[in-house]
Image (cartoon, rainbow, N blue to C red; front, side, top):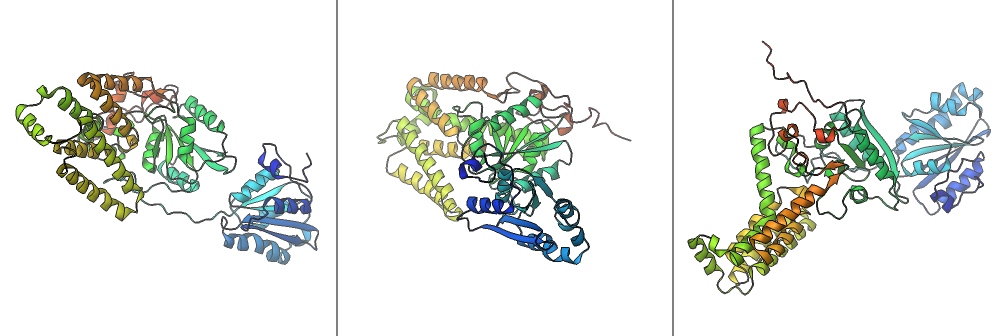
Amino acid sequence: MDSNNISDSDYCGDQNTKISKSIDVIKNNLLYIFSDCSDFVYREIELKESEIRIVIAYTNGLVDNNIVNTDILRPLTVELKLSSLSSELSKNNIVNVLKKHLLSISELQETEDFRTSVQRILSGYVLLYIDGLEIAVTASAQAWASRSVGPPDTEAVVRGPREGFVETLRVNTSLLRRKIKNPNLKFEEIVLGEQTNTSICICYIKGIADEKIIETVRKRLTSIKTDAILESGYIEEFIEDHPFSVFPTIGNTEKPDIAAAKLLEGRVAILCDGTPFVLTVPFLFLEPLQSSEDYYSRSYFASLVRILRLIALLISIILPALYVALVAFHPDVIPLKLLLTMAASKEGIPFSPLIESLIMIISFEILREAGVRMPRPVGQALSIVGALVLGDAAVKSGLVSSPMVIVTALTAITSFITPPFGGTVPILRIFVLLVTNILGFMGLFLASIAIIIHLSSLRSFGVPYLSPLSPTNVSDLKDAFIRVPIWAMSMRPKSLMRRSSNKKRMKIDTRKKVD
């Protein structure tokens, strides 16, 4: 292939294209590739009486124009002529002069591949192509509008850090580096998306993370062949172990302290440019029941809250089914006074308990979705007022009974306590409800057994999903449904440390008093 004539198909392909020695060919190729791109900027400069020609190319809006003007253009056009370097300048030493004496840029690199140079132009770098040389100098001058670091909306805490990830990859890596000031914290960057060329970063702590898990993450990411990666959710669907399971096997977080804690346990984080959500693997069933705030408060209170979260999860899944089973199949279990009250409230209701439940569940999901999609002030008012008006109107019109409204309200409230299961709970709720409507308590029991069997079959990057419950690991139970004091958790989770030698968090005698 002639390196002096690069077409669109050549650029989009996998083959490398050497940079031409002719500056005119380079200029024509750039103008061809960036035709109809109004944000593409290039400028040609002649040094030492036209003996050396340099083409400077960059994307307007992705670079800091002040840096380009003061640290690149001014040294080349003004300062060079006033210095003694002008007489010594030649094509043989131009690159060294640029890197060592002229350009006051912190990051300067060289590349011989034209396709790579074009990609760097699109990534916010300034490229300097030199006539007669088959290399280009890459100068870092990236600067674009970005959201400032602030508290995340999805993971609010009373006590703890309030900073969250943003949409800029390098800012996110810096937030993690601030938490873990250790050279063993590694960031491996790859590019995914044939059209978007999105930067993806694999983050782990060398010596703590299992090498097999790291290699599995690398293989799954590099095997992704798609046009676009616009958010980490794209990656999640490509690399998860069980794509057809309703349970998530890949975690996500907006908080650097949560991501850092998971890295210190031996997990691997995946950062995607353009999104504040960072993926973490492996992801286990118990993680949604835990919160970063658990580790910032007393262990007794944290344990109590975790048990409450588990109870809330069970209520949000089985409460409507339990109500249907009691009313339709086993009314003899209900105390007599309560049964009479419920019978009076159901008088005149035209629908069966199942239809009542489905009407209220679907209505709640519609209200919740409307509240999320509407502007925040309007959405909050819509959710609250809509729920009150709908519930009151449904009871007064005789469409549903008062106990059903209470059941739906409890189900709705408890479903908000475990956000990572936000997409899982509604599906499980309807599944358990339908089975229970056929077999009563037996159906509720069988549906629960089916869910447990399914959970037992899941794995996340080779780690059993129900760890440390199944297989049981006594030492890991210190941070399961209860949280023992931090000084008592001296070992990292064994389910994640199968091939790692760095299994200790701290010395066993940390709590010994010093007189």
